Length: 214
Image 1 (cartoon, rainbow, N blue to C red):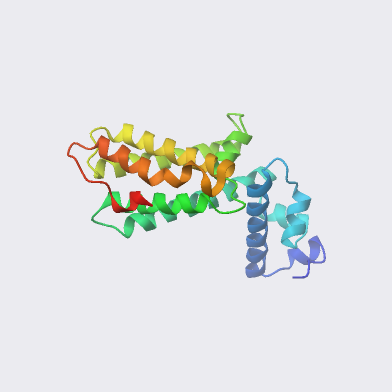
Image 2: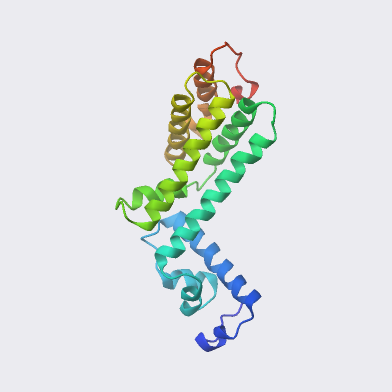
């Protein structure tokens, strides 16, 4: 697409066109932030990739930090949507839904060019407690932890919080090991380890889930 001719031209854009420009900015920033990190990417590179001018970016986002938060919210929404999609596919068997989600996660982390979880990466990259990117990442992880507690309770865990923490540690470990080892790494055993953990956490013995053999 052609770049707008300047701030005056962009000011006259119809609302739909401005939204499309905002979507391009957000998509470009998501890709760049994920591949190289938030600090390493400048505003100039984002607008160049998006095919817009800098005033267009600042019209939609108050700052680079605000854009980063928006991108992290996108990562969060996509991750949670995948989790809920697998859970919804097994409405009467929470364990089956969770195991299917973990099998998909293991496959995704083994793909070439995998760079881990954008949210986890942002929390590591921004250790400052008051940084907006860290706050957004940590809020997302807190929601995921609470969701895993609820799912653990629905599976009949004796201590849902303990099982949820174990599952979260496995998930975060998969994010990290996928970047290091790729397809031959520990992520290939994620479902087997998770299934054993779940079985050990239930009051009644349950045979291994078929997905755990993946």
